[in-house]
Image 1 (cartoon, rainbow, N blue to C red):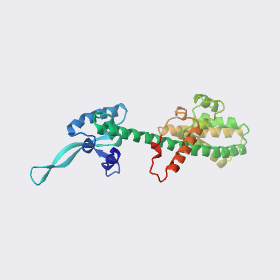
Image 2: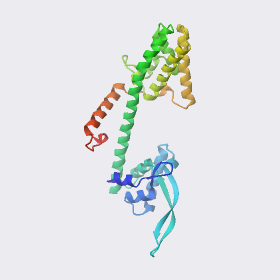
Image 3: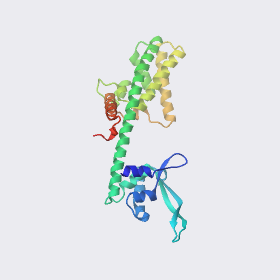
Image 4: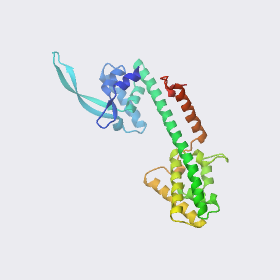
Length: 282
């Protein structure tokens, strides 16, 4: 199996990062001479540049000493050029290798499966974060509503808009709703990714804390406080080089994330102890 062999030749450097030797990968992919493997590496590096990735991060040029037979019983050392490749580099090389080689075809299939598996795992991770943060928003919005009421807020929807205006650079709830192109019955919180939800959770918790801590009273004062906190969160995102919340992608409804998580849990439970990989099931 290409998978087993590929993982078997993996190495780990002194910093704990995994890498593969180009000269070892060469033989695994069916090349009898390293020189004939170089063009595939060149095409892979071009693909790396096209995908706007750093070549140096994935194709590290090195010089190594290898043992060679000298015609006698003794072995001698010779200095050779090599590459230390990242997993992504190996993937690009397989995609740009000689497709007539059976080993290349097998490697392409392996990496396609690995890529799909990672994509699904990343999606499930994001789904889990969204579900968790949305539940947190429900609870902290209740707490914020109590703090706002204690501060004398009567028009709560208007108070909420002040927080959104600060965080979203002037956009109110209805503006965000329109920007996300949602149905009238949809909540904007159900169509936020984990990054956007986290920003709103921070806005909510900090506004609640400030209202209580400073014993703020009066609807106007509470509104200004919510706006100021939202604006401060936005400023922090900008200072950190983050994406402004109104520019983040709009994911599908949260219920779809819950469905995937439920399906994955059921699949994992069914395959427990069977040795089957739930990510590879049709």
